[in-house]
Every structure is written in C-alpha cells, then in structure tokens.
Length: 226
Image (cartoon, rainbow, N blue to C red; front, top):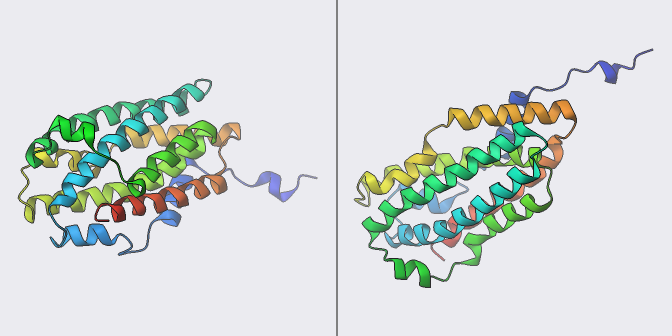
C-alpha cells in the first residue's frame, strides 16, 4: 500500500519563494531608519555613510556570490542565479560612483573610511552562508531579503530626490534595486525548482537563514545613524 505521504505533491518553486517572502517580511515600521529617511527627518550625512558602507558590502557580497557560483558548478541552474547576482554587484558599484560624486566623497575618503560593525554584519553572514550553506537554500533566503531591500531602496530613492535634493543620476543606485528584475526572478524559480527536484532544497533551513539576513538588514540601516 502506498502511504499518503508518498503521494503528496511536491511544492512548486514559486510557492516556496512566495512563502519565504511572506513569512520573512519584516513588520511594518520595523526599519525606523528608513522611516526617518522617507520623512526627510534623517540628516543628509546618512547618505554619505550609506555609500561608504555599501562599497564594502557590495565588494564582499560579490566575492560571496562568486564562491557560491563555484560551489554550485554541479548544479547549473543554481550557479546561474549566483553568477547573475555577482554581475549585478559590479553594476551596483558603478552606480555608487554617481552617488559619491553628488555627496562629494573623494577616493581618499573611501580608502580611509573605517566601516561600522553593525553595517558589516550582513555581508559577513552572507560570506558564512557562501562557505557552508546549501546554495539553493541561500537562493530562497536571499530572494526573501531582496524583496525587503528593494522596498527600502524604493523609499530611500524617492526621499533622496524629494527631501534631500539629490539628482536622478545619484539615485541610480537605489533605482537599480527598487526595480523588479525579471531575469533574476526567473533564475531564482529555476534554481529552486532544480533544488526541489534533486532534494537539495530545505525550505525550513532556508527560512532560518532568511530570518538572520532580515535581522542583519535592519542592523545595517540602524547603524547608519549610530
């Protein structure tokens, strides 16, 4: 006799990703720093700190995504997701140049800047995931986090224009993440479908990773005004 559990349908990749986004979404108003920026109540210097910190965050994340690409080389659909992410980090660094220029951040300032621990906890955890987590679980966790990060960038980019007088070119960094990425979404779906088919995907473990990513995300924003 076939047990009922054996006939249970396998979840689809879109259902797994949608569930992660919903379950890991931060509470409304949890990011008080973004609330202050959106209202024009944060000092303009918060953008300078954000730009300086993001240079290190992005450089670290790009290395982590390259490592995950290498670790997933036996699973091309998963490797393709991280390969696209790493390329996106290169674009993000290029977009930061216009923000630096608008804020008057000189190369010497970048070189001499001492990063804040609270802002660098996020990329440190991404590096930890790159070293030891199941890559497809990282796909799920990052997809949930990117939904929050993208929403924050949309609000901050709008506030940068409306309250802080930054030109459109300087806001290109925020616009990059605020806009949906159909290509990345497709690769995430394909990667998770592969992980489900091969038994590599573990949504419960992915949610654990995602909860920490969301916490470190909030820590990043909170540390900007510390």
